[in-house]
Length: 120
Image 1 (cartoon, one colour):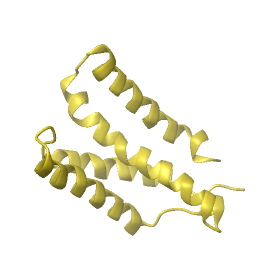
Image 2 (cartoon, rainbow, N blue to C red):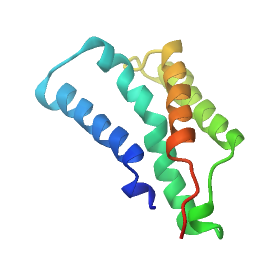
Image 3 (spheres, rainbow, N blue to C red):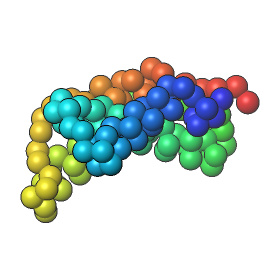
């Protein structure tokens, strides 16, 4: 199954879009969702999209999956970028330890529900 057809990938994508629409399109702000939902959904969306690209170009194709270390590096990279570097460069970004926790939870979700080899 292609990543695009995996309901465990589509769910976070739709939830991310809906949250953004409610926040920016309609102006509805639910504080807990506004603070952490995007961070929970970031890793399944980012890693899922990246996994699909790798499956297109890697010789293993649909059997390719990310290693634990690759997922840890992904979480570390996003955490460094969004929780350390961007807050240094712009006041619109803030550091939040709980965002890193959300990235890690999202990566665990990705690991268990999306990062599975599929038959050709």
